[in-house]
Image (cartoon, rainbow, N blue to C red; front, side):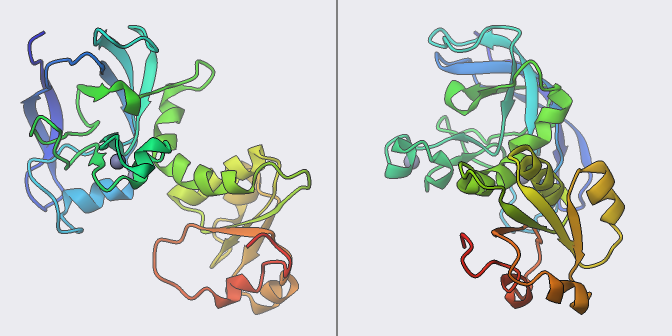
Length: 267
Ligand SMILES: [Zn+2]
Ligand SMILES: [Zn+2]
C-alpha cells in the first residue's frame, strides 16, 4: 500500500487559528486500522496545545483526540475489526508494550506512551490527530463503537467520558445506592453526572452558583444541586456523600468539600 495523502486542520503557530494542511499517513502495517474520520470532539487540551500553553507544541499540529470514524482498510493481521465498522480513538496511539503498565492493560501510564497528536511514532513521524480526513492507528488503540451508540455522541466519551468513567468505576459494584457528589459541571462533570446516574448512584451536583441548576436537574438527571458558596446549604450537606468526583480544572481549596464526605465513606 502507498502512503495516503490526507487533509487536516492544523495549527501553524500559537495564534489558535487552524488552516488546511496536507500530509501523508504511514503505510498500513499488519496491525494497523485505517479509518475515515466522521466525528471528532474538541476538548480543552486541544486548545492548550494549539496555543502552545503547555509549552510543548510542535507545529504544524493537527489536534483532535476524541475521534470516531468508519474503517476503510485493515492490516493483514487485524481480525477483530472489519471494513465499515465504526471505531474510536482517544488520547494515545502507542506505548512500549513491555513495561508493567503496558502488561497490565494500563498503557495510559506507560512512560513511553505515544499521544494521538504532538507525539512521535515509532517510524519517526509526528502523530497527527482527528481534525483530519483519515487516520491510521495500531489496532490495540482502536475501540469498536457499539451500534446502539450514536457515533457523534460517542466521540466525547473517548477522553472526557473516560476521565469521568475511570474513577466512577472504582466505586461501582456496591449493592447500596451510593451518594455521589459531582463537583463542577463542565465538559467532564456533565458526563460524570450521566455516568454516575447510569451506575445507579444518587447524584448531587456541587457548583459555585445556581446558574447550572436547571441543566443539572432537568437535562442531565441529577437528583440534587448544592451551591458551594451558600454556607447554610453546605452545612446541611455535611457528612452526606460517599464520594466526590472533582472536575474543577483550577487549583482550589478542598476543605469545605471534604467535610461533605461521610465519615465512614469510601474516601
Ligand atoms: Zn509501556
Ligand atoms: Zn482530552
